[in-house]
Length: 319
Image 1: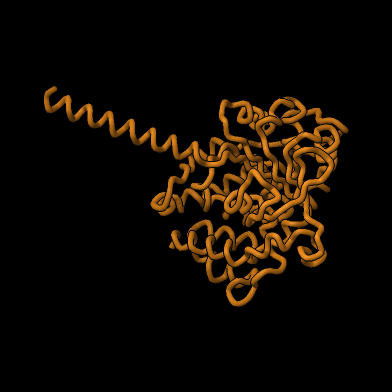
Image 2 (image 1 turned 90 degrees about the horizontal axis):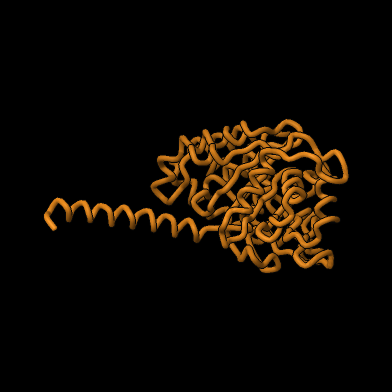
């Protein structure tokens, strides 16, 4: 083999190693779809999206779905991605962050209206995307983090009930459930075997209680560690100036703890199994875990300093 062929062979080996390494790395990450009502009545979804994108290297992101109903649209997800794209040159120095163009391709519009009857009748682009990704050959479960109405998940499960074997749902209830109670009722009543964490009050620990001294307060933390850091910090501050981020526990659950075990401790809460079905968990009503009458909230706010410190370190990347 002459010198030219040696160089060519070496290049082929290096390229192959590069792609194999990146593929293997991606295969080690949890598969995630985020379903969000960002851009609607509550600006905290912008906050949660900024936080999520700052941790985009920690997930194999397979979809970003706009699931209002009401005013939120896919364009609002793209607004957050636009800020991410400005910060991307700095972020990619610290990890395998997905290209903004890839995130845009994964952004889909979900249902813009609440479910009209007892059974889903429509199939949104977002619901079709859930089915497509859930049916893709992959041994890893597909986690669907629901920050808005659960309409698109209900549509997907109704159309292709076999996807229940692959999906794991972590939904933020409360207000989101009230906006489309029929889709929640459909899943709860017709699909008791669905793997589902329904977080109705635990998420309140994101902004209620915990360590809020000095710069760990809901406003003081953002003023000191977020608003002046990069385009995403600016967007966060413009949308809402203090921590609410009621949907972020769904992300924190994936970042710290064992996602396969909802009853174990995690930054995103610890839940109890109900007798509703084999794979259904919800807020722990134990009196010692209540904060401001919100069951389970202390299973999140006990970690407040830890997850804020971790977030703070990442924001420094954007200086």
